[in-house]
Image 1 (cartoon, rainbow, N blue to C red):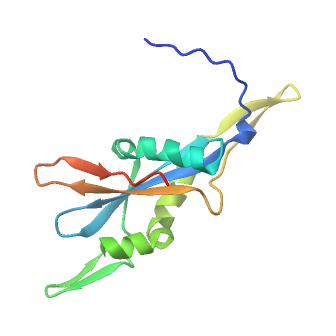
Image 2 (image 1 turned 90 degrees about the horizontal axis):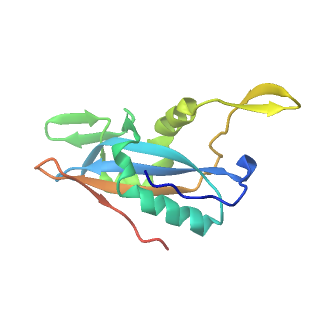
Length: 154
């Protein structure tokens, strides 16, 4: 096991919950699955973005999975496909498509315990109203391989 020594005190109150969000696209350009994961990060927005981008390539494998909400509908010659969105619509409507998933991620965050004046109390950290978010496309190949297309860190 590799151990890394730490020399810095980090206050929990300096952390901000940030999100990585993913949408899964097949060859047709249709998205029916999404995923998301929260991270407690500190530093500048640029430092947080770099950290999110570093994890965006693989963390979709351990993220909370979700579906496109039912109000997203694709009309085809065969009828309506509910809970699906073309990739361009999803990219433009992130908050609308990801809202229920973000709510689920927040509900699933573990409660923590801390000692205050020699008494233990529960506390939780919440996702901010406008969290820092990195969104990544994951392309599903016919052979089952998942390929994350990680954006530039600008």
